[in-house]
Each structure stands twice: as structure tokens, then as C-alpha cells.
Image (tube, helix red, strand yellow):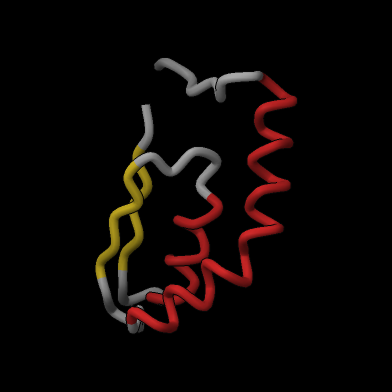
Length: 71
């Protein structure tokens, strides 16, 4: 099984964590504006560290689905 390695190693992952924290309010507002709701099925293409995918999953709930893909 191959393991995904974020470009930049540990420092790259920390950069993605910081960006996710900074952008969280804007991303949350975007999902509210577009009408993301429970039971939706969502796809996050180019998900990086998966922060946005996890946010989508929390909004669509256990009856929805959020999938993140990256290469």
C-alpha cells in the first residue's frame, strides 16, 4: 500500500494545517451560502490534508457522504 506524502513533508503538512485554520470561517460561510445540508453527497477533489473534506462530512452528517481525493 502506498502512502500519501504531502509535498514539503512535515513542514508542508503544518502549512496546510495553518491555512485550514485561517480559511475555516470563509470555507464554512461558503458552504452555508451554497446550501450544503445533511444527507448530501460531496466530493473534494485535490483535498490536500483533508480539512475541507472533514468539514463537509460534519455538515452532511452520518446519512450524507464526503469523499476527498488527492494524488
